[in-house]
Image (cartoon, rainbow, N blue to C red; front, side, top):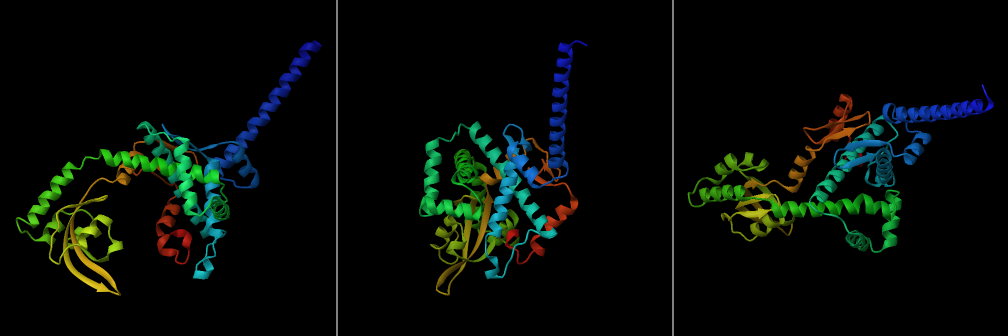
Length: 348
C-alpha cells in the first residue's frame, strides 16, 4: 500500500472511530433520557445543551426535555422556598412518596405545555400573531402589579429561579394567546339553540305555572338539577357576577327572566333572603342551560391533535386529550393523592 493510500486509510479510520464514539455517546444519552430516566448532573447538562424532544404535537411543534426539566425545577423551588411549617404543613420531595408527588406535578406541567402549544397553533390559524408591543404592554401590566420591575424580578428569582425573560415566555405570551383565542371563540359562538331552550323553560314556570323544582330537575344542566335547581345560601361574591347582580335585586318568590353568564343561561327563583354576620345572603334555585365554554371547546380541540410522547413514563390519551401515566400504580397513586395527602400543600 502506497504512503498516500495509507494516509487516507488512517484518516478514514480516525473518522470512523470518531463517528463510532459520537454514536455511542448519543446512544447512551438517548437510553439514559428515554429508557432509564437518569437525572445526574451529566444528563441534566446534556439535555440543556441538546434539545432532545420529549413531546411532539403534530401541527403545533415540539416540547424539549430541557423545558420540562426546567419547569420541574421551578415548581420544586416554589414549594421548597415556602415556610409552610408556620401553618402546620410541610413539603418533602426527597421521600419515595414525595418523588411520586413531584412526578404528578411533572405530568401536569407536560399537559400545560401541550395545551400552550395547541392554543398558539389555534390562535395563529385564526390570524393571531403577537406583536412585540403587545407583549411588552402586558409585561408592563404585570410589573405594575408587583410595584416595580425589581420587585417582580426578585420574586421570580426567589420563588421559581426565573428571569424576566422566562416569565415573559412561560406566562405572559401563553396568557395573551389564550385570552385572544377565547375572545374569538366567544364572539363567534352561536347560542340560538340554548336561547330557545331557556325561553321555553322560562315560559313553563311563568306563563304555564309549572312547578319550578320539577322543571329544573327534569331539564336543567349542572349538579343543581338533582336538587330541583336548589343552589342553597350564597353571598354576593360567591355567585357569578351576572347571577349575583340579578339575584340581589329580586324579591322573595320572584322568577327572573333568563340571565346570561359566561357559563350559560339562568332562570332564577329567589326562595329566601337573610342577613348573617352583617352580610346579605340569598337562597336561590335555578334552571340552567349550559353553553359550550371556551374551556369546553379547547378540550375538544385538544383531542383533534396527534401527540407523540417520547418519555417512558407517560402516554397520550386521544379520548381525553391529555397525557397520562403508563404505569397503573402511578395512576392509582394520583387518584388517591387528594385523600391521602393532608398537610401537604403541593397536592393542591
